[in-house]
Image (cartoon, rainbow, N blue to C red; front, side):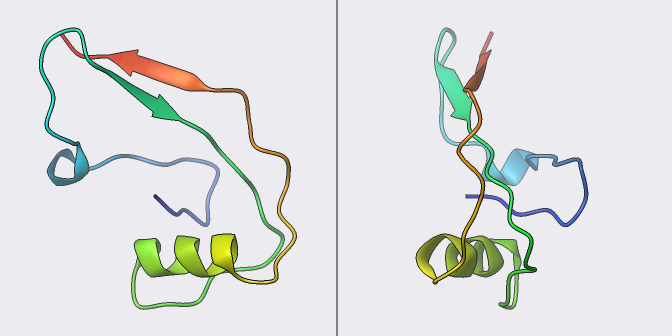
Length: 67
């Protein structure tokens, strides 16, 4: 789960799950009109996702295939 207060997001190398060539990683986006609370992006995203906040519909999936 990631979090951004801008219109862009970058997945840091340390957060990329273990993978091998041919594996895929899938990304879905949901937007909120509120700002999440927490000490980091994971806590902020979780608070919005699990709280009583109304977010947008989930986006269509975007995927990346590892080489």
